[in-house]
Every structure is written in C-alpha cells, then in structure tokens.
Length: 188
Image (cartoon, rainbow, N blue to C red):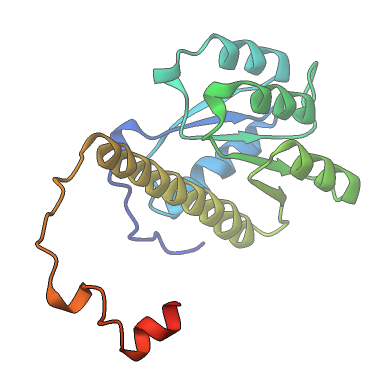
C-alpha cells in the first residue's frame, strides 16, 4: 500500500466531495485514495443517479461541492445523463467532475469529455494504481479549483480598486522633436 502523502489542503474543513457510486467497495477505495493522498475532505455518497440529480438540483450555491465523482453505470439515471444535467446547471460551472468507470469504451470517453467531464478514469485493476491515479487526479483538480478561486478573488479586488492616475509633467525627452531632426522627418 502506498505511503500516506504529506500534502494538505488549506481549506480542508470546508472541502466536500460528492460521490455518485453504487458499488460500496469502490466508495471505500475512493475514500482510501483521498486519505492516502493527504486530502482532507468530507465525502457525501449517493448510490443512484436519480437521487444524486435531485440532491444536486436542490443544493443552494453555498452547498455546491468542491468536486463531483460519478460512476457511468448507475441505476435509474446513467452517469452520462447526470453529467449532462450537472453541466447544464450554472451553479456547477466551476465544479470539476470526474467520471470513474470500468467502461473501456472509447465512445463513453468521448461523450463524457464532450459533455464537460474534467477527467475520465478507467478504474485501474491494482490497488496501488487505483489509489495513486484516483487520489492524484482528485488532488490536482482540487488544487486547480482553489487556485482559480484565488485568482477570481484577486481579479474582483482589482476591478473594484482603481489606482490614482499618476500625473507627471511632460519631460523634454518626450517633447516633439525639432523640425529638422531625423525623427521629425520619419514622422512626415
């Protein structure tokens, strides 16, 4: 089993991962991948697509998870249908969605990417590979989202802060050149 990583998440208390997976073994593996990679997050697990769709639709913007993990083969509403609904809902625009599946179908991958999946992971067979691949992808997407959020805050602060204009007397260096100079000839 891989050694626990020393990476920490500065917003660990508020990091939420919404997992839509009907296989309890896979849920436990996802939790272990999160723990092994040093990600401190709360997992909310839903086992069927229809219930996940209802839960996500009812969420207030302040309750939107930091990351969503979706299995493709779900009862009632498929993972692709759920992904389509997530991407149509504006409150999830900044939320990364990982498709985690046993499907090796290239069509499923293309369709998931077309619908806006942030990552598509075919469930690896070995435990170490699963923990490293899934945990590493979750860490990368959470880190990218946090960096984007910080950038948005800085840009918003800049747009509300207007620096004072700096007025300087026009120096001789920037004055119009004498008429007989080479620069004046080039301007003509």
